[in-house]
Image 1 (cartoon, rainbow, N blue to C red):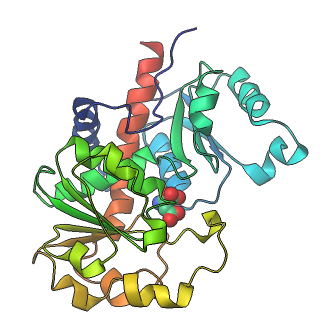
Image 2 (image 1 turned 45 degrees about the vertical axis):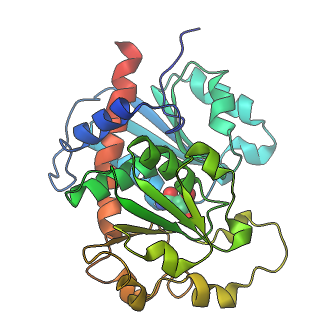
Length: 305
Ligand code: NCD
């Protein structure tokens, strides 16, 4: 069987491959509203087994902007709700010969497992607590838009690190480019094994220490839906790990504040920060389209060439 080149994770990509996607994304500015025909006649299936606003819409718009046709299926509307297995669902969709399947699933490793059975390329739109490769790509693009190279930048990633596929993909990407990464959160949400991915990484439970001299602050949502331990102290969380205006004074003067969304105002970030000049949260959303266009073009053009 031909090995399809989808996009399962940042872990599998080289620095050069990442750079190519980021460079190519600069040719696709969502503000240029026109429709291209680079992927005309191609068909992309969006298969989401978990809630999503940004990622699903962003992939769909990206595919349409490139001239491809798209179909979106959510788990509730699929035959998974009739007891069909994941492999059977994917084989059924693949038999209809789409050019790529974009999928999000609550189980870590689900797309990697399925890719072994399918010759349709799979693009991972988030698998459990594992990876969310296009999020890390759009985050890198957003950081680079500020002008600086990633090498040597101090990036503080703060919040529920343990359950965050966004953190993991960013750690893979940023470490490949030599950024200085600080992971911060309550001890129970701060897995030491991430140090194995990038040995130079710093872990701290102290938010002020993490933010000190940071060039980039990346906030994460507390993923209550993935926490199976009893009674998370939600009310105290903001006091210790919520980003407020006073924190920004500890960072570099031109610090940017990022968040993959959805944001919970008053939980992990204050409204004043989310709406401040330092916040690039909506630029991340905008860049998501350009980066996903570059990813789709790369995956779909690789299919038949
Ligand atoms: C993230 C996700 O689903 O992993 N959201 C996103 O894709 N923009 C983060 C989150 O849900 O908190």
